[in-house]
Structure formats: C-alpha cells, structure tokens
Length: 608
Image (cartoon, rainbow, N blue to C red; front, top):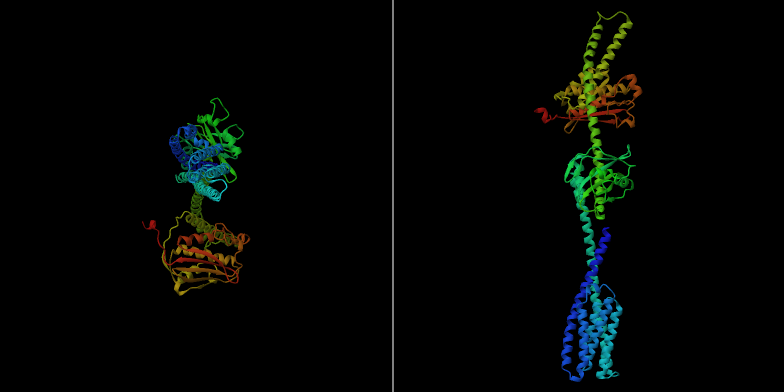
C-alpha cells in the first residue's frame, strides 16, 4: 500500500514538475508572440495602401490564434499528445509571419528570429516528431527567405543555409540538454519524494510502536496494560470502543477480556463468550485471519451478538497473530465515520506488537499466579513441617528419656531379647530425632528465619571435640593449616554442617580413609571433608545439593538417610555467608569444600 501510494505520489509530482516547466516556457512564448504581433501590425501600418490588406488579414488571423492560445487551458492540455502538435502549428504560424516580414524587406534576412522558434518548440514539445517538423520548417523558411534575397544557388546562400542548419541543430541539442537536466532533477526529486514517503510510513509505524511501548509501561498486570493498549489502538482510528477477545482452546470459543475501553474510560465487562460455530465478525476474522469491517449493522440483525451488545453501528476487527498462531481478535467500533481500508491497515500494523504484548502478559500472569500458588503451597508445607516436627519432638524426647532410663543397669531387663529391643528402640529414636531436627532446620532455611550467632572458633579444639562425640569419629584425620586455625562462625551451624559431611563420608566412603583439611584463602577459610570411596556418579553431580536427593538409593535403604544432609549443608553455609561445592577426589572418592568468610557481616535488619 505504502509503495503504491509512493509511486503514485512520485509520478504525479514528476508530471507536475515537467508541466510547470513547459507552462513557464509557453507563457514566455505568448508574451513574445504578442510582442511580435504588435511589431507586425506596426510594420503593416507602415506599408503602402496596396499591400496593407493582405498583412491586415494575416495580423487578424494571428491575433485570433493568439487569443485562442492565451485562453487555452494549457495545464490540462499539456497532458495530451495534442499539445505537442498545437505547439508545432503555433511555431509554423510564427515562421510564416516572419517570412512575410522578411520577404517584404530588402535587407539581408535575419536568422535569429527563425532560430528562436525551433528552440521554443524543442523546449515545450515532448514528442520528437513535432520538434523535427518545426526544425525542418524553420530551415525551409530560411532557405526561401535567403533564396529570394541572394539567390537560391550561390556560394553565399549555401554557406548561410548550412550555418543555419548547424545552428538549428545546435539549438535543438541545447534544448534537449536542458530538458535532460530537468528530467534528471525530476528523477532526483522522485527519489527524494519516494524516500520521504517511505520515511513518512516508517514514522507512522514507529509512532504506533511507541504508543504500544507506552501501553506496555502502563503497568505490570494485564488488567492495567490491556485497557491502555486497546485505548491507544481505538484512538488511532477514531473509534470510541475497543476490546480484545482471546481464544479458549478448551471451549473452542472467543472469550472477552475485561476491562474494555469505552469513550476514553475503562469499563469492567461481564463474562461474554462467542462460540466459533456462531455467525459473527470476530469469529470470521479469527478463522480466516483477515481483517474485516461492518459499516452497516441493522438493529434487528442477530448475526453479530458482539455488535448488538456494544450497540455499535460500525465495527472493525483484526486477528491477533503471534508467529503462525492466531491467539484472538482485536475489535474496535462506534466510529462516527465509516471505517476505511487505511483504518484496517492501521489496525493490522498495531495488532502485531499488541498480540506479542498480550501473549507475553498473559503468560506472565499465568506464571505469576502459578508462582504465587507454589509459594503459598511451599509456605503451607514449611508451616506444616515446622508444626509437625515440634509436635513430634515433644513425645519423642519423652520416649528417648524413658529408653535411656531403661538402659540403666538397675532397670535393664535380664532377658537378652528385651535388652536388644531396648537398644534397637533407642537407636531408631535417635535416628528419628535427627530426621526431625533436619526437617526443622530445613524449614527454617527455606523461610530465611534461621538465626546466626557468630563466635570466634579455634578450629583445632573445635574439630577434635566434635569428632570425639561422633560414632567412629576417631577414624577421621585432621589437617589444619596454621593460617586457618581461627574462624568466626556460628558453632552450632558449623558443627551440624561438618557432622553431616563426615557422616556421609563414613557412610558412603566404605572403609576408605576420611580426613578434614583446612586452608586459608584470601578473606575466607576453607574446610574440606575428603574420602577415597567410590565417589558420586556423574549424572548426580548437578543435583547432589537438592533436597531429598539420594545418591545411592539401594545403600540408603540399608544405611538410612532422607536425602537432606547435603541440602542442609548448603543452606547452613549460605546462612553464614559462605558457599559449598563438590570435587572428585584424585584417585577416586569425593571432596566437599565449605568456604566461610573470615568475618560474618550482620544484616542491617538484624542489628535494628
């Protein structure tokens, strides 16, 4: 459309430019012709009575012809081929007038006046045939005048005639050159006009995209963005009502999105659905993908329920397309004037970015709602785990205390089977207590409510006491870098963190050696728990710190564990502003390294 308009505009401007040039030359020729007629009449008056009658007749004929030429609608006539031959007749008449004057004079004929006429013809006529005709006529006129004056076959007349022919050709070439320059200028003007038209179209497109971008920035929710977007589209075509209907695949229908845009305001809309099998403009546009207009809607027409609901006399609709998929229909209505093809082009140009905005905003709304539901479920789960863990810990503490009492020598049953059952119950109770404590710590980590109480720790003493309290802790070696002997951390969190890593190494490292190695690096202290067991499968490297991840399920069933140990290690390290990572041990095995800052910076909220 824009290209067609540009070509039409350029052609019109090109024709107008050439016509304006030709009109200026014709007006100049009319002035010269009237001046020549006055001179001719004055010359006729100076003749004797016997010669005046013929000249008067010629003067009257020339005057009548000039009147006709003066009042002729040249702007309209120049668009036709008749203008070129009319100019040729005009030039030949001027030649005849000059011949009459010069043949009646005894002086040497003048070639200047005769040269002006072919120049005028070449400057005003477009076709080459009239120009050649005038040129040949001017040469013949000069030859006749020259022959009557000096003789037809003389060296002097032949030389003068050849010079006149050359001058006529030269004048024609000059006029052709002038016209080529005008055409070149016209071509450049055509190029500039084409660029201007393209820039105008691009400017309009950018203006619409800018309006869409403003609508996008109107809010973060679809209910905020939608009316602004639809309102700008409606204003672009002069409509008072605008709305969007999105496709619902489950119901095979188009559902109205609320709110809608009415006369510069947003109006909440009730639920309104159009089945795709119903007749109507929105359904037709959605199914075909082509924009459509209804400029005449009868009040009794039931074919368009949406038009009847809007009480609009005119409606226009375009499809909302994302790539090769149509997601809905954009509809505007209630315009004072009928919708035009330009209105449809405007709607189509805005519909593409609008469809992208609506599609992304709809996905964002769905993702946000899903995220809110997931966050709510996660909070409910955390609260549930916290409550249940507290409720379980109280009776479990009593059970563990009772079992500890029964294990005293004076109360221990004599039956070996009873003693075995008490030992098994005590062991499983402690295992259950560890699981409950892990769940409590995990819920506090997820809720970001885990308190951190940093204290200066002597790692040598701290690690030795910790290993002494662990079963099989005497088999773990310690290598402490003197530069990392001191550390500021929460002792309870650090103890649980190292305990989980050491128990994992002892549990899954087989009979391999387990060691704790410390090192100082920049502004942090690193503690590594190293084993030389079978290691961790490659496919588990990316998930080992996730909750409930069991690296060796078959071993977990026999050795126990819920898959929370490494997740708790990561949460405790991050709570103390540190980090943790895994590396395969050289020669086989697993190495888990925890890096803690030399000093823990307390959050501002914690100090207030």
